[in-house]
Length: 218
Image (cartoon, rainbow, N blue to C red; front, side, top):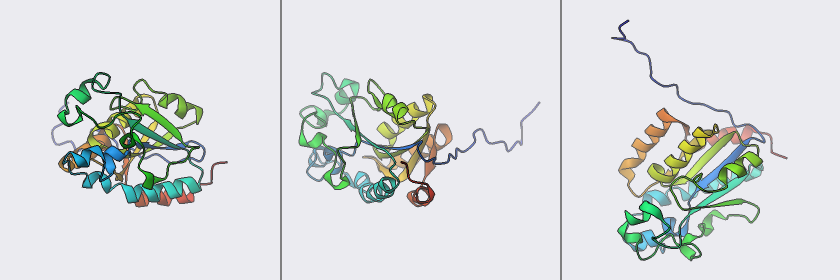
């Protein structure tokens, strides 16, 4: 039977409810080296403005998430050096002599985002925060079903981690306002790729609206 002239859409846009006790926020790599003016990326002449645009929206998101006692997980990307950083490091000449190095100031979470000691922290060495980490174990322990994603870079670690979340049968929701990249022209295509491929994409306003209607986790 011919499908000529059919208006059937080859995908269904995801929409998942945020359920009390089953929603977790994962913030991908909001580190000094990416987001701070004195961080490695900015000091190497890379324009970090699109990544920095995520700071204020993420602060707003955190305030509402914490008010409902939704767990917060932070990821940090880095390695001891080029040797254990994998192809990612070798394909970025500006990281050969520094940047994204464990146990440095640049590796730490941006202070303006005010991470808390009681939050969860995941150390990663590859684009996906699930690869060789305990992220899945943490999410299972927290009884997570729906996972909110924010952070950097839209087209790399955010895309890779949200896809891997879907592969593990979590329901990933990427908050567009809270994501950014070093190559802004790739942001919208990456967002569209995620939307039609494996996750829901929302704006901050609609996300906060739903969070504020939730009962607080106890």
